[in-house]
Every structure is written in structure tokens, then in C-alpha cells.
Image 1 (tube, rainbow, N blue to C red):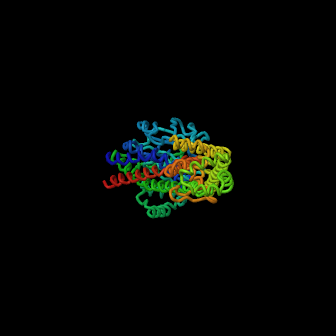
Image 2 (cartoon, rainbow, N blue to C red):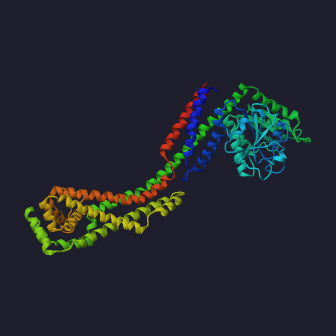
Image 3 (cartoon, rainbow, N blue to C red):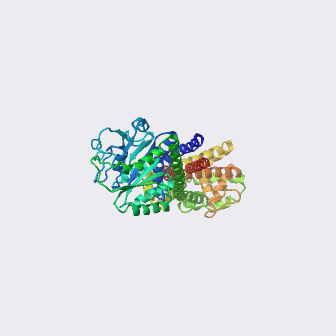
Amino acid sequence: MESGAESLVSNQLRQLYPQLGNLRFPLVAPDAELGADLVLDVRHQLEDYILPRFAALDAPLLAVIGGSTGSGKSTLINSLAGAELSVASAIRPTTRRPLLIFHPEEESWFTSTRILPELARVTTTGTAEAAEIRSDTADTTQLELRAATAVPRGLALLDSPDIDSIVEENRRLAAQLLAAADLWIFVTTAARYADAIPWAMLDAAAARNVVIGVVLNRVPPGVGAQVRADLVDKFAQRGLSHAPLFVISEQDLGADHLLPEPDVAPLRDWLQGLTADAAARATVVRQSLLGAVGQLEDTLGQISAAYQQQLIAKAGYAEDLTKFATAEAEVLEQLSDGSLLRGEVLARWQDVVGTGQWTRMLESGISRLRDRITGFFRARNLPTEPVAEAIEESLHTLLVAEAQSAIVEALQAWESRPGGEKLASAVRQNLRSSSVRAEVAAELIRQWQKYLLEIVRTEGQDKKTMARALALGVNVVGVALMIAVFSVTGGLAGGEVAVASGTAVVAQRVLEALFGDSAVRRMASQARNDLAQRVQQFLAADQQVFAQQLEQLELSSAQAEEFAAGIAGLAAASRAEQDK
């Protein structure tokens, strides 16, 4: 494998590695669990095998000896090593802590965390019994290291837990170790070779195109030819016809608990042929490494598809938050179509302005109207506080009701989604209380009313205008401005909508008499826009609690795009290497 192509492929993988760590699958979706599991598997394979192998193409080959429970893996690895290093027993599971055996001169390749970095190194030198490999204290988070001169240079043997172990963590570790191998030595028996789990592992080997040798162990006398023929046929059906098959007969072991050398010699010769020189090892490395990368591309595509499902699910939750936009639109509509002026507000305003007298006054010219307006209010001396309070109460009720309605509808929508109860519960815990929401709404209205008075003062900077406004009363003018804002749709220009026998028109005429038509339009527009902004901020405070829950999911379309680009880059680099 040439360094340039190797560098291109490995660089793409090194860019993808941290991206994988950022992918989350928190929402219920068809492939959420699969996506999370695949991310874990891929990160393990990158850490344990692919990236370290790219970084050290000349490192010894790692041969993982795997297989079913009771298939004789430990006996086989002891026989290859020429000593009882891994204990064999009828008690299951036997291998709890994986054992890595290598030539003493190549110890430095394995004492570091170059491969399998999550497994703590434990170096032993005594017999298998002294090492307590099978004891309850053995830990699947550890990797036991043993040196053996019988293991050829350029090769390391790894005794793996059973692939069908009754202990889940053993099965998980066995799969992880097999994914970290340069080559597999798969051990099965004449009684177990047709089981589903071994063939699932062999199918995975075929898909990855890993270099593999199969040991058919414990074959009873007289059935070897029949079983071999059946097994070879099954290999051919699964694309494994290239895999060598080694048959070991059933027999009693000697005092050293090792297989006879003639039974082990064919497998030993095959391994020595693979590791005889740098060129032979490079061939194995290239086949297994590029096969792993090729399979990885398919797996990354599955992860990408699963992550897209997460984004779609998140978009569904986000769409439910349009309830707040609907609430905002409803508030603004009621603020401008006269709805707010019905009932108590209308009654209090009529107490201030009367009815028939204003109809006659409106027939006068503006110049005469100014004097008559001032005189009218001075003569009646009616307070405007009840009108302002009625408006405040109506506006407050509207704001709180629409906010609460949006919250309830959004919560119900989230809870109706699969797994949405957890998100909805988190929102409930972080929402402001009803009393706090009501107080915020009241403060909003007070601040808006103050802003209206500021508008009146700003427009009344002219001495004559201010004098007329002061004579009439700033509060009266402010109330008139609120009435005007709430009584028309689309602004005051050319389209007044009278409410309740012309009382809204009265408010507009009061303002026009004091400030002029264009100024009134400007004042009403400013007041309306300011209120709309305050309403939006009021509703957004509750909506943000929902949005923050979605943000905490750490699901991002930008991440998805970056990940997809990384997969495409890896595919291009892999094609360039395969074409050589």
C-alpha cells in the first residue's frame, strides 16, 4: 500500500473520527438504536485497528482466534505457542480477559495503547493457573500480555472470548476484537459448525474481505470427510472458498494439554507463510485493511441515514412550536380589529366622551374642534383611569390566555410523539409559573403605556401643541392613542373602522385636532409596532424553553452535511487506492 494513497484514506478517516463522536441519537426513530450502536462500533474499529494500522503498516499481524463456546480456542492457541498460556476448561465462560501472545522481541508493539486503547495492559509471566485468567477477578476491560518464543516474529495471537458467550460483555468484546484483527482464525467443531452465530461471524468476514483461516476442531473418527465436504460447500455459497480449512480430529490430550504437532503444523505453516517476510505481511495488511475501510463506507452510510431520521424527528418537534406564532398572530389581530374595545373598555370610554355631543362637534372644522375638545373635557372633568385600566385588563387577559393556549397545545403535540413525554416533562420543569407569566404580562403593558406617553410628549414638542395637550391632559391623549391603535386594521390612513357608534373615530379626531393627520398616523404606527415587538418577546420567552430542549439534543443539519461530505471524501480516496 503506497504511502500517498494511504495518507489520503487515513486523513479522511481521521477527519471523520471526531465527527462520529458528535453524532447523537436521542429521539425515537426507526434506526436510532442502530445508529448509536454503529457509531460505537465504528469508533472502536477506528481506534482499535484501522487508524493504528495505517500509522504502522509494518507492525506485526494481529491474528484473533475466535469461535463458539467450547470449540477449543484456548487449547489451540496454547498449542501454537508451545506452552499452556491460556487455560482450557469445561467451565464456561473460560476466557474472560483476552490474552495477547507475541514474540519477546516485538513486545514494544503491544505494551503501548497503539491498538485496543480502551483495554488496560496486564503483563504476566507465569503459568495460566498463576495468572488466574479464568478467575472471577479477570476483567474484560483488560488485555493480558504474554511473550512466547514459539510465536513467529511478525505475528501476534489474540485469544478472544466466545462469540456466543452467555455473558453479554464477553460477546461484545469478542466482536470488537475480531473487528481489530488483520486476520481471523475461526474455530468451530463438527458438532457446532452449522450453528447460526458462527455463520453470522463468517458472513461478516466475507463482507469485510478479511484474511481468514477456519479450524474444524474435535472431528470424530470416520466423519471428517463428510463434514469437510459440507463445510467447503457452505464456504463456497458464502464467498469464502478462498479460506483454508484445517481439520483437527477429536482426541485425548497429553500431559502438557497440547495438541499433537502434526495436527497443528498445517495451521502453523500457513501462518508462517503469511508472516514470512514484509511483502507477505503487506499483502495481508492491504487485503484486510482495505476490506475494513470498504465495509466502513457502508456502515457510515447507515449512520448518516439514521442521523437524518433524527433531524426529521427534530423538525417535527420544531414544527409544533408554530403554535406560538399562531398565538402571536391571534393577539395582533385582536389588537387591531376592534375586538379589544368591546365590553368594559367601550363602556368606560363612552363615559368619557359621550355620544351625541361628539357627533355634532365632529362636523366642525379642525381649528374650532381643538378649542371645543379642550373645553369639553375641562367641563366634564371625567377621569380616564377607568378606560386605561379596562384596556390594561383586556390586553392582559388576551396575552396570558394566548400564551397559555400555545404552551398547552405545544406540550400536547410533543407528548403525542413517540418518546416525546421526556422532552415535554423537561419543558414543564423549566417553564415560568403562571403567576410569573401574569406579572410579566402586566409589566409589559405598563411599559408600553409609558412608551405611549413618551410618543405623545415627543410629538408635542411644539409649544402650541404641548400647550393644547397639557390643557386637554396627557393621560386623555394617551388613552385616545390606545383607542386609535386598537380600532383600525392596516393603519389609520383612509380606512377607519368605527367601533360602537363612532367612539373610535372620536379618539382619532381628538388626536388629529392636536397633532395633525400625518403625525397621528406616525404615532399609531410606532405604538402598534412597539406593542407587536413586546408581544413577540413575551411569547418567545415560553417558546424558548421548548427550543432550548431541542438545542440540548445537539442535532444539527450542519453536522449531517459535514459528515456526508466526509463519507464522500472517504469513498473517493478508497476508489483511488482500489484502482491501483
